[in-house]
Image (cartoon, rainbow, N blue to C red; front, side):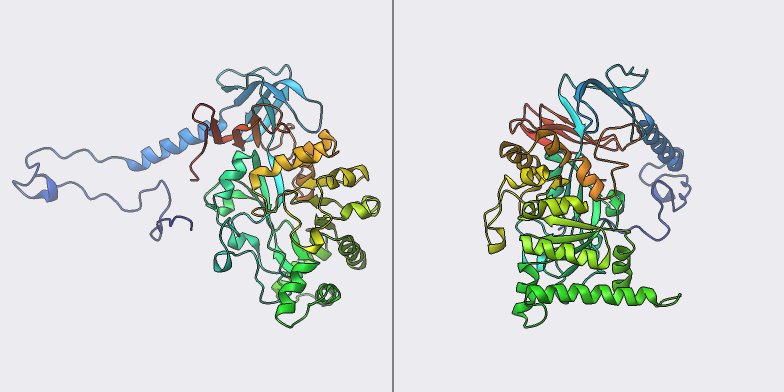
Length: 454
């Protein structure tokens, strides 16, 4: 459970004195003659408001101070690697290149030839909703009381103190997309987050970032046991169709329409404001996902895609991206029989834009980069593997203008690695989010330290 924060009193504003100080009486404590400290002159009142203001000014000045990471092997993702410097100002990348000059007064981090990359992005996790080792009533990933749960929001169930967020930082991951689970045909709204913070609103990159749906074994198993629809694949497709038809009918009503949380969520998909995040593994489920997307004309993203390579040419022709994974798992159910570390390479070779995901806690989130490494071993192009951890998931989340590559004006979400991240012996040494250091690895003590979440 997350720590309990003190409840501020009404009218409380951080850094402001809300109760006027009582003037000291002559004669010491309580103003009693002869009391403790009697006869001593009263101390002058401390101007706490001015002190708080000075602290805030110092913090603001620190934020404005230019950060220079020098002598790094910089891998910008979009563009060729170079040896040089990245400058950060106000949480954004100010300049980068082989001959960038460091301004006077800048805070300098000497990379000493180590690799500097954008923070990795895992576009499908259940961080904060389904912590490792917790089951049943302690998991908030699935609201499995109705097959259509379009209106529930992952943001309402994410605990930023889930230890998995620290693991993400240790794995060089600065952003994640938290999805509801796959127990329902329509599972709810996802949220894209930074991986450091104490207050969820401070971490949000985009909310909602997509609407989760599931085909295949999971929803039919959940509702089949309850003896209700859907208990088959055809029933699952029916539930999704009926929901979209209802949303189309709702949108056709004249304004002002009655408020309806379910319809409003589905309408965002029909208006192409957010993508439809389709959980599916088998090739026939991928085909159903394509059929439904064509029928209702929305932006489709395939999540998992264990057998998506079978329809790789069709997916490529329609411009449908695939978030493939988790890859470090057993073939624990029939629809995973086609799982293989070679599949990402097959999809990419067919022209499909891929991202690699962990589905944390199914695979620990800090193993994200290792999945890419082993996919390269089985045929995935190295450059494509790096894009599958950075700019490709950023595009899926609609955040490629801010994160996913190193470019002037983008968020300074940076990770300094000891060497090539695709070498399993290398590790993230320093992690910055918005130019702020949030994780450091101590190579002597062999332990990582996360900045306080507050």
